[in-house]
Every structure is written in C-alpha cells, then in structure tokens.
Amino acid sequence: MTTRRPGRRDPLEAAIEVALQPGRFIAYRAGWDFVSSLEEVAGQLDTLVRTDARRAVGLYETFLAGCYEKAEELDDSGGNFSTFVVSLYCGWIRARQAASADADETARLLLGRMETDPYGFTYTLERDAVKVMSKDGLAAFERQVKARFESTDAVEEASDGAPRRDPEYQRRRRGDILRAIYSRQRDVRAYVALCEQTQLSAQDCLAVAAMLKTRRRRDEALAWVDRGLALEKTHPHGSMAGHDLVTLKRELLTKLGRHRDALEDAWAAFREGPSTFSYGDLMRFVPKAERAAWHAKALDAAERADLGALIELWLETREVERLVRRLRTATDPEIEELSHYRTEPAARRLAKSHPDVAAKVYRALGVRILKAKKSKYYEAALSHFENAKRCYERSDLHREWAALVAEVRRAHHRKVGFMANFERLAAGHGPSDAPSFLDRARNRWAARAEPTGSGYAGREKRAPR
Image (cartoon, rainbow, N blue to C red; front, side, top):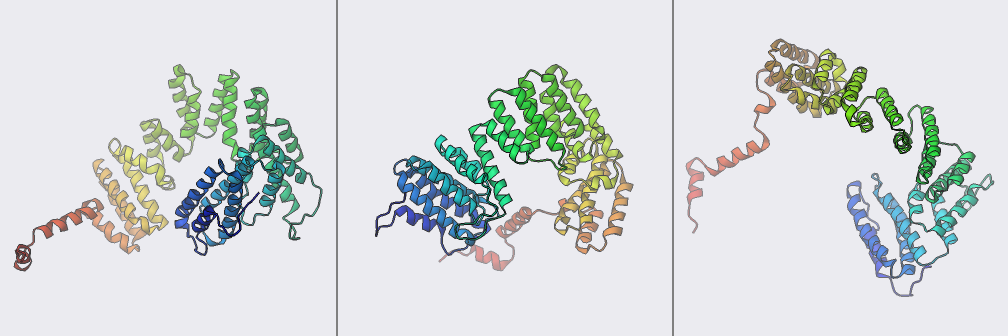
C-alpha cells in the first residue's frame, strides 16, 4: 500500500519525526504535552484519509513504527501514550478501508501485530478496533481470529522462530477478541457457542443479555442476567459486571411491566448494603405517593449498618437527628477509624446545631492524625482540635476539653514540633488567631508604604535630578 517517490520525503513524515522527539526521554510530567503534540499530527493524517487514503496508510504505518521505537524513551505510567497508539491503529484501519485494501490482509496484519506486541499497547485493542471496522472488515477479522483460535498446534512459533507465549494464554486472548467481534456483530448464537468452548463469566452473561435486549427478547435477556448474578455470587470480590447486571435487571423488569419486582430487587439490595447509592437506586423505583413511607422504612432498616455509610446516607437525606443519636452512642475509637472524608462533613454540619457531638467528631479527627503519625497533616490536626475546643466551650463541656488536652500531652508529648503549637492552643491561642500569609504580606506592604526614620524617608522624598 505504501508509495513513496525516491529522493523526496513526505512533509507529514517529517512532522511525525519532529513530534516523536527521537533521542529525548519524556518524563511522566511531560507526557500529556508530548501526546498532545502527537495528536496534532495524527489529526492531519485523519484529514488526509478523505483525500489520499493510500498515502495515509503509509504514514500511519510509519507513525506506529515510530511509536514502538519511542516506547523505551518515555514514562507512560498514566497510559495516555498507550491510548494514543490504539487510536493510531484505528486510524490505520480506517485508512486501509478507505483505500479499498484487501480486508483479509488488513485482518492478518492487525492480528499479527497484536500477537507480537512487545509493549502491550494492543492488549485490549479489539474493543476499539471493531468499532471502526466495516462489515466486511469485521467478517475478515473474525475469520483470521477464529482460524487461530481453533488451531490445535501445541506449540506455535513467532516469525523469528522463537516460541510464543503459553498456548493456553493465546487461546484465551483470541477468545476475548472473538467476544468483542460477536458483540459488535450482535451475533448471540456465535457468542453463546464460544462461551460453551471456554469458561462462562458474568461479563459474558451481561454481553449476551445486552444483545438480546437490543432485539427486544427481554425474557431471554433477563434469564441471562440472573445467570450472571448467580456467577457473581461464586466470586468473593465480584467483578466489574456486577453493577451493570443489577442495573440491567431492573431496566428489563420495568420494560416487562414488572415494576413491583424491580422495586423489590432494589429494596433487597438496599437492605444488604445501605448507602447513598443504593438508597438512590431504591427511590427511583418507588411511586411518588409512597416515597415518604419508603423513606422511613429504608432508614429504619439501615440503623444497623456501618457507621461510615450511615453518616453519608443521613447527611444526604437530612436525617440529622438519626445521625446525632448514632454518633452520641458511638465510641471514640469507632469514630477514629472512619475516613475524614466521611466524618469532617458531619462535624461541619453539626457544629452549630449540636456542638457537643461536633466536638466529639473533631476530637476524633485530630487524634486519628496523631495516632497515624502523619506529620505533614499535623497542621490539620491542630485545626480540628481548635474546632473541638470551640464546640466544647459552646456546649459548656470544659472538663471534656481539659481531658482531651491531658490525653494529648500524655500520649503525644514526644511530638515536639506539634506539642509547641498545641500548647499555644491550650493556652487560648489557636491557629486561626495567627495572621494568614496574605495578611502578613499586606501588613508588610503597608509598613513599607509609610516608612519611618529620617534616612529612608529622606530617600523617598528626594526629587529626581
């Protein structure tokens, strides 16, 4: 496909080389800018496909070769360079199709690259590639992959004679590619037949159910969803498909007119794991006239749930009194174990209406930092203790504040830098009393604008010659 006049270099090829910055190592922080410059050149190739597809094919191949050569000269921890390489492969496929290249040859070349990729750029390439393939291209890709999938060779060799990866891995990998192809083709029969030859997963059940749903075969789709959910229960940590299966099940139940079944399914999920998310899912299926009753029912059922999840739920639903009752009965260690992402919003919310409870939470926030010995957060701990002091004083709980001061002195007296600031707080001078950086800057600026002393003042008033 590549045509090139001898002695002349394509200007876009030169642009590719400049953008790749050969010989220069690209650090992680420079990765985004580097890839952005590559994308600008790739955009020109994408435009070229419409006017000179054959030329674009050759340039895409050159660009891909350059990317593989560059792979050792950059830190791709963020994965954006890998994503860019995938987009180049997709552009190459579109260009070959626009140039009326042989579909089987395109599939053969693509699969060969995928199976000899030293950097893993193409590990999940099929998910994007099938989206840009024409009907003929997809059929040709299926033929190439299926022929290799069904191969019975115990040992395969690469083009250089070196042994390939484990044949079992290759079979699984080709099975994944076929799954992507059949999903794109919406070929339920072929997908199910493939699953019978391999290990069925919850993700497979989701894929089959989604295809059946598009064909309005909702009862069959629901059966596959239930099958996938049953598989989910056999895995201790579940899979990525779990949430999608649950969502699809309720959607199918609703489409089938089984609204009450969808509600009961959401209710069962909420009782199993009360949270703001499961509460939101539940209320979506509750009729408007019944929302108040279901709200009370849900919150009563959630009373025995994990405290961290309940804090978020009760704040979201404005159930402040329930939150206050639970926090008052919670032990200090129980609150200290919770992330500040959950407890800090609760402390701020309760500081005015229930300062005694807010003080308890602020105390836990500060102690949690000290126990973890996270010195870079000691300033935050001081701020939490200052807020606790104010809330204790507002609630006339001076003994509780004195007990906290004694506890910190006893348990953390060796944290010299922290204790110096804490003692100032105990004496009545908290972090908020100190002027901020900008306050200090403004004060110094004002002082310089009104100088004192004859020497400086005289120089300021002296007229220019």
